[in-house]
Image 1 (cartoon, one colour):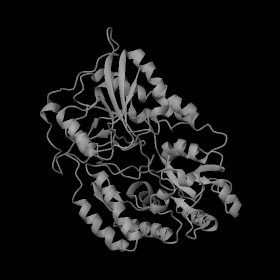
Image 2 (cartoon, one colour):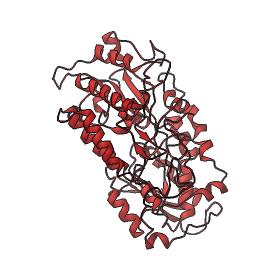
Image 3 (tube, one colour):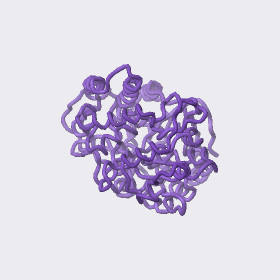
Image 4 (cartoon, one colour):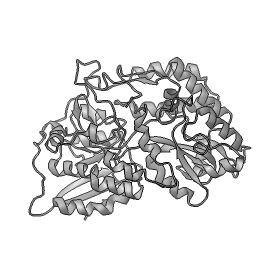
Length: 468
């Protein structure tokens, strides 16, 4: 039976029908670090038939931080263990996404067999030959990831396939129907049939929010990370008709005209106290507690947060889920999609069993369970119909995210650091310490000199937002 230990780490990612990176071209940036001796010593094993063997179970180590969706599926691990004669050793630690630790694992050859890693920096390990390439396994099993799954954007890198999809995690807008009704405000579905705009959202917030400085009673318009480059602000920029990164050339464009206009629009909401400050969210308990307590009318967040949001709400109020609003009614808003795929470490001694495990996690057993129990939007397309079958909530919003233009994260070796640094800059802007335009222009110039991605243009030939 699978065992759970504490104290290690992992990180993941996820998205949707993402662009297929082109085959490697001549280097445009310095290649990633050369493979260490530990990495090079282990050649990629040739795929074999389903690996159930006689004798003692084969031990497969699995490291993940993803406590939002892994605990509910752990009871199912026994089925995999019995079918493949495997003993899973599961290490789940939600708080430990540490690039230095990942790097130490792969440099020393001590990485777990299967990892759900930080997808914002995982290209670093693709480039250094630390991750097992799984194309031959997929070909053997007649699996077409692009056809069968909605993707998150880094399953493929430089013409190779490294990650097996696990979950689909598009962003949408959870909202408090009860607050809107009490304020006499319009409703995204009841009044607009889901075709609403940022202006509509603003009017609803203005009519409903009550911020007087009393932390015990204040209600904000929206709980969103307005200091986040991708999940919040990037969605506004795309919806504004701009882009915040040129994926083909691997350059940030946060200082472009449309991008600056969208960021000024967000700042306007913040200045009017429509956006809940980070300090208030922390005071209210962090995570989804503020929205669950009815302290924000809207919550922009991922599909994976639905379970936590539902639990925090309990029976406090009626809620629903709407698509990210457009700038005009005839053009839907552009959300970001993500996800948390699994990879097999190149140094594993049990490659066949490790691959079977990541395939199983992305297969019908887990994906159909998620759909039936409404735990998480499945990445397996055939399982999504059951998930969106909900008589009370518009959960189809998540699956529909892939039917209109959508965005993905701008991934390279330093994505995580740049995201964190952007938050620092934006919080200084919100605090009045800096001006937005000058700050973003200087920041954009600096980080463009720090984009590292190896020996190819990984998204060459692809435009983001992605048009289905």
